[in-house]
Length: 117
Image (tube, rainbow, N blue to C red; front, side, top):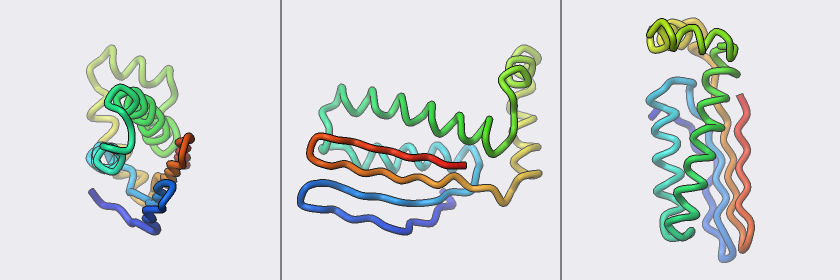
């Protein structure tokens, strides 16, 4: 995963993490795996699964619709024509400098995540 970690703090009451990744499918998958590994043990399994499902959707949205500028209608058409993967690779090259910025804060009873494209 091509990423830049800017902050990682394990606090007595929680965890704070900030990093940026280049906007590619493997990097998005790697970011999700890193978040999962970091939070394993901090959340119950059912909570972790639900959180990872939600953050995967947020990351995919920022990647596809934000950084790669694929509209919902375009995505639907690309899926129907089995062309989504080809278009994603093409747009990754076109927008190769774009990044996703991810911030995660886990406090005693609160988990916050921010993803910006």
